[in-house]
Image (cartoon, rainbow, N blue to C red; front, side):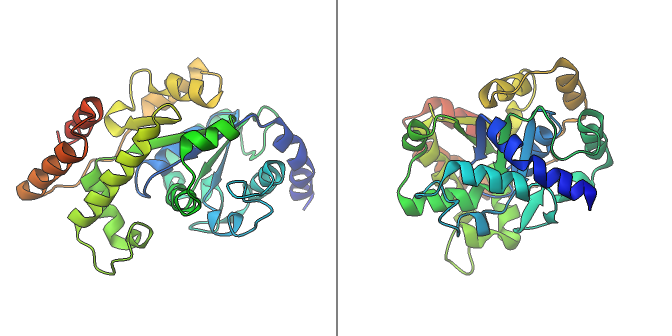
Length: 280
């Protein structure tokens, strides 16, 4: 109880020190948990897992609408310890990424067993699809929003869209479509449409694919989110960083994917090539 009380009493201080809020956009099952787990190991970053199902229902906290950013931060920090796996969210260490002993070890190496550390300066809020849908309902684009709140930084991770579609087909497709029985290719098209819409705001959204999560990626991510690129941390993460092997897909599905990408991104050569490169 004493530990909980100590954490609770430090919430306002931690919230007031946060200068950057990172928010991933796009579908679920799209490298969001991996990215959040990586950031959670950084001693200057606090990660809130999910929680949009209640944060966005409270108009006092919903700063996308008319809520107060300061109150949102206090609530986010408060909810980041404890909670549950799944949509209730809370402590990112309850997510499936931390079922991996290596990830738990990395967290402990740089943070010990603490949730709130005195050096936190960035909040990373991982509930990508609910936030994306909420912004769409409100008619808010990333560029418009970051002009209003420059401390907010949007990210768009891109897993192979065919893999993302297959993974969402199991239990998350309801966030992508009202169709009760979509196909993998239906979801692939929707996912590509989301990517297309969000990359129209490229100055306000950091976009990276699963193939680009190497080399200088971690330093670039730190720079974007206002975190120090700690050499020991980067070296440790790069040693363990591994994107899960993708699914196999039928040749005709790959052909449909190529056609979708070439049609949808006919005027964006760079994004088209990055998406086609994910087939390899």
